Image (cartoon, rainbow, N blue to C red):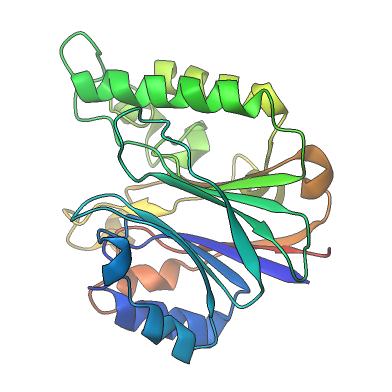
Length: 264
């Protein structure tokens, strides 16, 4: 069995206490973090090593973005794609070398896209769509058992948001974003593992805004975080779970960890 977690941590150094709690309580084999918000030399390697996570692939930058994959099982860095086309640290890929040997695990942080869903007036929205198009061209050539996880910043299904009607014109759930993400999905025939195990139309959220005072009572969530796998690899997934309680931990991220288990 190999278990893999994805979590937009929103500053790994600030939230190391809840990362430690999660690793002690849930103990996945591999943890993929997004928005680490630090340079590679600032990453808290020692804290992870003390918890038994001694293998790293870290792609960071000063103060923003950044991704890191930490693991109890051996891995080697496999790729760094600049899908943003501006040098931002938003992706790192690894190859697993121990259990799960041969699996490629891609960890990505897709741009949020700003507030206005119109590339003519909002450069960030155009950058997001272009990022996804570059990912799509890459996915078209993927020829190994691959899993891509991370904060996609898109909630594609009606059941992935608290109100389909109210969010249709809100960045993350607009038709153009959903269509663009679907093209990426089709390019490799990815399987959306979360929705294989938590079936549409069941509620499935992974993010709740900090602006919501009582996130649990209001429950205005969105499913922005995803774990997708190559079709054959996806068949080996035995379980998928979300840890909503982590949104209540001290100084939480606005995202929660999601985990998939494989019988490899």
